Length: 347
Ligand SMILES: Nc1ncnc2c1ncn2[C@@H]1O[C@H](COP(=O)(O)OP(=O)(O)OP(=O)(O)O)[C@@H](O)[C@H]1O
Figure 1 (cartoon, rainbow, N blue to C red):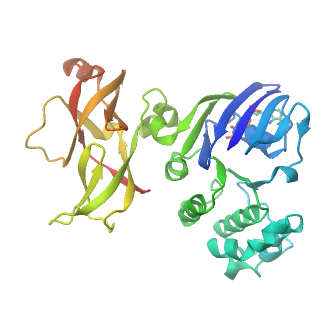
Figure 2 (cartoon, rainbow, N blue to C red):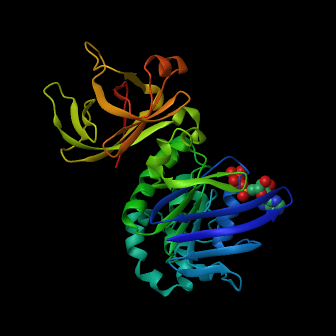
Figure 3 (tube, rainbow, N blue to C red):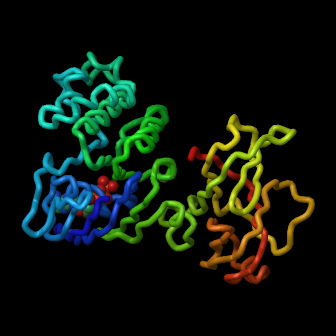
């Protein structure tokens, strides 16, 4: 667990940042200039904040009388540009951190294998693609035997094809390495795929932090991720295949049908349901082409964004103020959510 609480004053901005990052991926998300990189630099020991306390697994990195050096903090950093040593081979770059971390050498083969770096070992950084360079940078960060991995916009300099290439490695990292990962990104798509916890920042402060699923389904907070992104991420498990090939999944709101995808029975999924893809009806709809209709209860009404609950899940529907009135939507109202489209993310 990473605990962060610090204040720092720049000429144009006073920062007051406090949050906790449990294990899993914590995304720092916010507009340009809100203080994400400053927070990362304070955590990594590259900036000394005016005051505060930063601790990692109970170990104080920074406090009144403590200010550990970046090396002593045991934080592996990956930045937008891979920052590899250009005159060294990939292997020499990867072995560099183990000069001062003995345990790291033991992990060499495992990390090389996990990131499939073997074929690149004798190459020099300038002969690698951007995606390969970032994979090496991730490997090097892991080989410093870190207690925390910090990634500051690691995909920002890559084109879409390279991003798509490296994303599965990041997912693998998240699932196989039991390290907290702090991930700075502007991209909602990256946050959706990787993050378990989100810290929403605005103008040097933390607006909110908590589980990604809660933020996405919160009518006040979801718009901070972008108006088109408001919606939900709900859990589902593949139950089986229907005669027509559609996949039946179980959710907290009952069964749902998904297009024919190559998914085995028992596979855990996350379903992304955008608020503007949900229609509400007071009565169970008849003769409808939409396949997925869930019985739900209105939990909150925030303008035209309606938070709905079913089981322990929450989702959002975007409706017009006229519909809120016509349907008499109030907290506690039972209704039916007609889900027009669902996208599937791996669990
Ligand atoms: N060394 C510095 N001296 C003065 N002001 C600084 C310094 N570093 C950052 N700032 C200011 O602090 C604010 C936060 O910057 P920071 O780089 O942390 O934001 P960010 O959220 O990471 O932005 P971006 O997404 O564009 O990287 C900005 O207004 C920036 O101009």
